[in-house]
Image 1 (tube, rainbow over the protein chains, first blue to last red):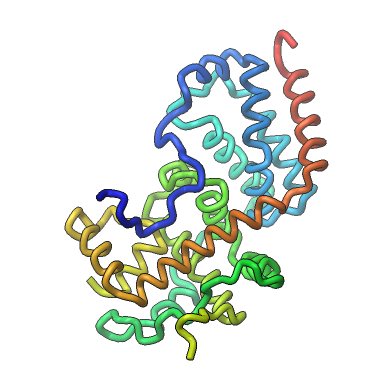
Image 2 (image 1 turned 45 degrees about the vertical axis):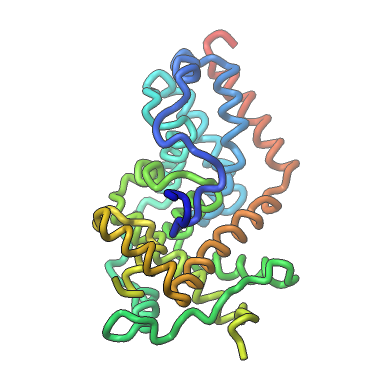
Length: 213
Length: 81
């Protein structure tokens, strides 16, 4: 019954909510090359995707990922295993990206997308403009291009939060650790990212066939 | 529980302020309201599509080269390498 309906998409991969596997904690701390290399292999593609999602070019992203593993290796004895090694690596990566940017742009208090979403409801909070949008036809040839275009338009922090959640399958708690933000802040980032994508795809005409007259 | 509130919870995945009663109310509403159901379904589809897209996004050869570079760098950092 508990699983009868979930509002939010479950993470694509099952993720242990807390902590690294005990066998691995010591391996990391003593810098066991087998353990470190396994972790590197497992996490590298995800780190690279995340760095790209944060707006780095492919070359910059590769540099940032290399620097991330170097820091990981040098600080291995500090690893306490309370977070998974992958989460720790994402945290290091986010700091590398922030260093590149210097000026850290704070999330705006309110944005266009908030007003757009708000305009879909009437004064009582009912849909006045219900979703007309993407009942995505994933097979349509131009769909990926559209989603790619729409993703490009999402501000970097929102996009990164979305990618860590939906593509990399981190839990919301893990992403809060990685970003160093509250659950509330992360909620705002995810809310804006998802609604931007939804509105964008709706504008591009991914309209549901079932509801259209 | 309004549609606005249900949409906010669904998109932000932030239910902490709701309490148990609030969470149940959100789920019941989403089950009964076709617009909210559709909204939630669309968000799920967006996540799914992003996942599928990312599978083919990275160039495998380039990933392998980076992996080799990282591993050899790690080995040179390790004390007993």
